[in-house]
Image (tube, rainbow, N blue to C red):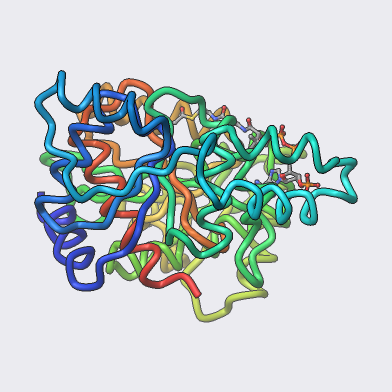
Length: 333
Ligand code: ACO
């Protein structure tokens, strides 16, 4: 696939350090060997060195030269606990609790990123999305000027003319259950930036609803309308428009009827869903019925990149998400 080929190429040009907290997990170990051999990133595996080495031997995986960090024995654990305590003491954190928490591989990996011992983190082959996001939200927090962390999927729909020859970006499908109008505007702007910087496409952002340009009145529509206004006000340089129905967003003929004055309608390649129910259901509909490849969820808005995997992921998926995370790390300040 052309898009992933370009991501791999970019990742190799400026090799980043990516920590994998599920270091003793089979698919993660298989992926680590491939990432190392391809030169996509320098991975660090978190976990017990003895267990990781024994598992790698059983799997026939070569992890020679790959760094292993064991939170139980690492000389960094006390330093990370101290910093974590400082970050969370106003939330009731104690020094004792902090030491216990940073020994959890997900918190340990997140602290490695925070303390610049790694550039990014990938996890989720075993843990849930919430398990991964919570330490990220508590420790890494949002990038300057960004109010909310969100996520996106790159959808590759075969034999399709919508979007950029079947490539569309969907957001938010994995993080914010019910964003406010202000948060929805922030998600739209972040996704437009992602489209430009990571996907190298000129974003045309549609704010989706069950109404097109005032065809229906409801508080749910009002939220999307307000979000559109806020996003346009904040970033007049971006092509963002709404509220609009999905068909008006992507089908030129429908757009001509329902939103003839919109530059985005009929040409949208970035679809912003009003809440997590519609976003999550929406991407899965396209993935299953449209036989689309869904790359993600990839996080956006964190000060440093932290990404989730699906628990059903393959080792190839892990390789690709690590490469994407490395490319995000190249552009994060
Ligand atoms: N952006 C920035 N900060 C946030 C966000 C956000 N989107 N959400 C929460 N926070 C902050 C809070 O302000 C809080 O900060 P503080 O502790 O410093 O004050 C911290 O993060 C923790 O917030 P909580 O509200 O306590 O966290 P919560 O337990 O609600 O977890 C989470 C947040 C994990 C993102 C939650 O909203 C969630 O579970 N979302 C849905 C995830 C999910 O299940 N997705 C679907 C499956 S994925 C798939 O199908 C591909």
